[in-house]
Length: 450
Image 1 (cartoon, rainbow, N blue to C red):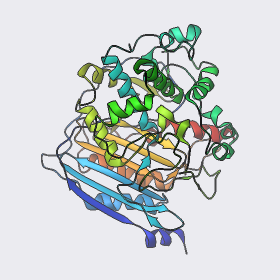
Image 2 (cartoon, helix red, strand yellow):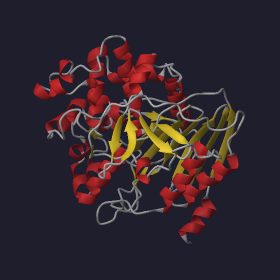
Image 3 (cartoon, helix red, strand yellow):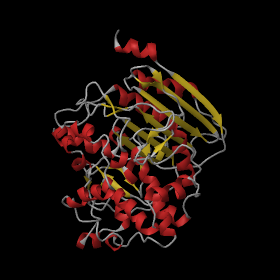
Image 4 (tube, rainbow, N blue to C red):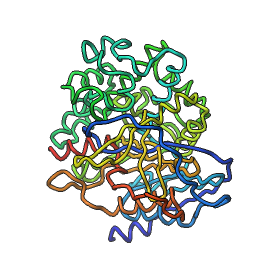
């Protein structure tokens, strides 16, 4: 049977509309890994225009159709939560298990990857508010054995948070076969436990990418170091600190660090990794030791919890005003041509859309992806999880070729964030690469070298 007919025959759609109290929210997505031209401090972005007239509601039928179109385009499965003021929509499409055709559900728990970074940044800023951490103090003052010598004196805590430290990412060293375009390391490390100091050793032991503070380059090593900084400041495991001070404080019910558990608790989907066509057919990596992500990317959550977290954050329920201001102070991220593609704060990203700026972060794990986005005024939120990762094919230069999934996904994201809102002054549609995660971009470049 042709795949298009199979998709239509087995397409699954579930929608749940729920009323709720109005909310603010925040924070966006991340993008190109690798170095960017000189980064400079930026003022806190001003709130964007209001989204819809008071009392406007979500177009549930359109959201249903657009999410289904992402599955019809080839994505195995997806689930999403969208908010517009007091109005909520939850939906799911496709399969949680492609063999049994078990359908996805909107309430499924999901590995949210680098969205963990926002949680870690919030915990660090909470410690700063208590006077235990100074953002502009050298990291070597806190972790002299992990970032020794002159480099430890040059790199500040803020540089770790906003990805301007120049410390290399550990992923290519923890998963060395990826540099040859082979997924062998993914299988070798499925049940391997990585101590955080080992991951830090990979990143810090590699050559410095640039003078600290001079440029921007996404590095998971920065956020594993921040976890160890939390351990030093609070005298407890960083996962314990983040769980008590961030997850519990935001009243999240389905968000947790998996620790040594390799499977996700409760309802969840399998996660299928394609690695840009190097794994064909895509392989299930939902059973995985997530110590390789740690305080940079190990959290599990539902899409509702992700939205609730960002709402609590931007409403000021997790940080004091001064720390929230620091969180939203950004540096520019530019592409190879010198064009600004986004702005990165302290574990938070801002990009432009046709209806104004959006904030949040993305997350990429082996087999799955997550995107969390919010309008700048907090009136509109989206959290989207997917069950197929790195499905793109690459050209001879290692750039992703256009594909139907990305096109359909962009339509859904636009509807979820902007709906029928008119484009604001100076608004623009983001480059598709701005909707790709930095982890995925880093691995794409590795695959291209293979």
